[in-house]
Image (tube, rainbow, N blue to C red; front, side):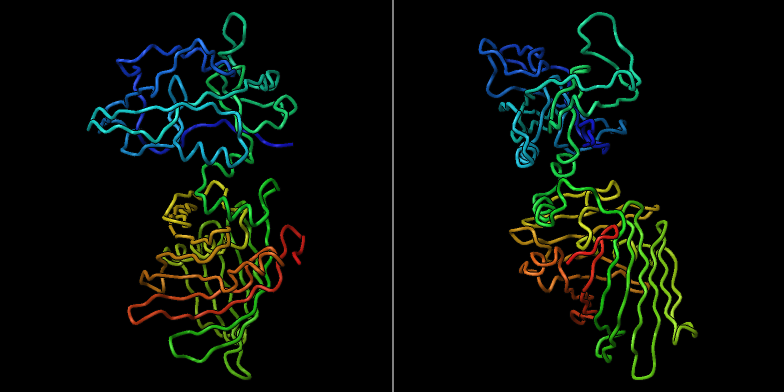
Amino acid sequence: MPTYYLFGRNSDPGRWIGTRQGTNQPRVDWYYWRKGSFLPKTEKIPDPVLFTLKPMSPYASDHSPYMPSFLGAAIPLFSDELVEALQKCGVDNLEVYNCEISDPDNGYVYKSYKAVNIIGLVAAADMGKSNATIHNGPPIIDVDFDGLVIDEEEANNHLFFGLAESTNGIMVHEKVRDLSLLPSGVRHWLRRSGVVGKPRVSVVKLRQRGRLQTEPGASWMDFQATQWISTKTPGFVWFADVTAYPGAFLYGRDKYQAGRGAMTISLLSLVPVVDATGPKVDQASLLRFLGEMALYPSAAVEPYVRWEEAGENAARATMTYGGVTATGVFQFDDVGNVLSFEARRYRESELEDWLVEAKDADGRDVEKRGYVARWDVSWRLDAGDWTWLELEIYDVTYDGERLR
């Protein structure tokens, strides 16, 4: 059965709608916008409907210049981008009207929002299991919920609807929640990867082979590796056997657990060569996990990742976990294949530009295997780009099921 979520703006500080409707326009009766039905033809809707932002206060912790995609008001206000994203996710019960939002601080008028009437009011709250305060008098349309439990049978797999028991509440199906607020490139990627509407993967096993260099111009060393990844609680452990030269073998382990990274390399599994830990390794390990998300795309909607547009077919991912935050940019092609991931990552003690590039980005391996199989990893140094790792993924297992 699907999971439902209460739809709302994110917790970031931002702008807020003022309590008064714009002047010099016919009065709008907000009551009709909470009934879940089409507005009556007798209701004269101004074009545009006018709103005014609250003045921004430097003393209010929830105020900032940020304009969220959803502004709660007597009428819900959605950005044009949000309306388009919901519709692309299959939401077809939105009646939208032009609106303008004036900023009293600078006189700017936002015209990229819509006043939204949500068609469909569903009595989907399980009142026996919910923690609720019911006010006097029928109908039950103004319940205060301290803990809301949705009756999934009553919700009937609807994607997006108003909650009849509390008409300020908007419920969203998990499928829509996972997709609607994501940048377009990420939505295309998730659809192409086949993860939409399926349970999220928890454990991934990768088998890898390739070659690497320790410094520019050095000899290439072949390796074989196995990696396990946890996505619910982000982490990984990577074990590699490296042929340094004939008869000499290095054993490597790269680990990211509980927000902390650790890299060890030993000669013949006995003599320590590298043993690295600390805040810079933590940041580097987090970025490795984030960049490798191209191989476990269902993790893109986990709560530790936040997305925003970063240009055409590009999206900026910010991951926060274990007190560490880092950001990188994914680039996609027009159909949703991941082309690259780039970030500022620690290389030993210095931040450098780090680039991961898909080498079969034409999609043939995606169609055949379900994932991109070949990758190059480079440092973009002042002296020029240095590709130090050439990697092939030749076996992937998701929650015990092998992809073929």
